[in-house]
Length: 285
Ligand SMILES: Nc1ncnc2c1ncn2[C@@H]1O[C@H](COP(=O)(O)OP(=O)(O)OP(=O)(O)O)[C@@H](O)[C@H]1O
Image (cartoon, rainbow, N blue to C red):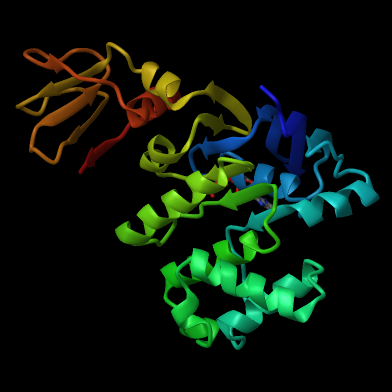
């Protein structure tokens, strides 16, 4: 793989809590999905890559640059777009003013060119009709689109997106997937998500983190394959199954040992993920 991001033995501690524990990761062009339970260290890793947090140990190389060195860190910031988990926008700005402000920070100094770029990202994120609305009046999903819009300013080569699909309605989620797929054709996108459907729809590479380290690194098909031969469908709820939930058809999907009378099912990414993490869950879909 032609890696645009190389992360080696990345370590970060908050007090006595080791949040990243010698994490290793290589990412090439295309869309990489980062999955992992709450507290796995995904946001911390993305913040280190986006240069908003300095690691305690290890090394990052992104677009051939070393963010531990000040001049290279600045060069990297010029070429990356970051959608943080909590963007904390100024609520009294309008959508246009906020994007214009971020564009100024991104060194788009020519006013006409900058405004064209703001209008471009407004169109891309379906926010053109809200350009003059105050940020505080936006719904959660619109704010999330605004967060994506500011990350797209200046057409970055590397996009770091922390849970970008949170709060999006189904239609916007589809539009988001189409946009990110297109962006991934000629650049590197790393996004964290809790939605295995996002990974299935978008990613050619998937990484699972747990306990501050990488526990899976491969393709979505490979992650589904972790559950090969361990996914079953049955009509009655089995007793004592480790992982089971009800399908939209009202049947029962089981991951683990075969319950009596169950038929084998094709494994999905979610099955592999749950099995990998050894999660004990009983969810009703
Ligand atoms: N600034 C901070 N100070 C102290 N602890 C922190 C800080 N940021 C993160 N942590 C801790 O680091 C751990 C990993 O957090 P992180 O946000 O990276 O996980 P995550 O995988 O993104 O989780 P989630 O899926 O819930 O967003 C958590 O235990 C969190 O409480």
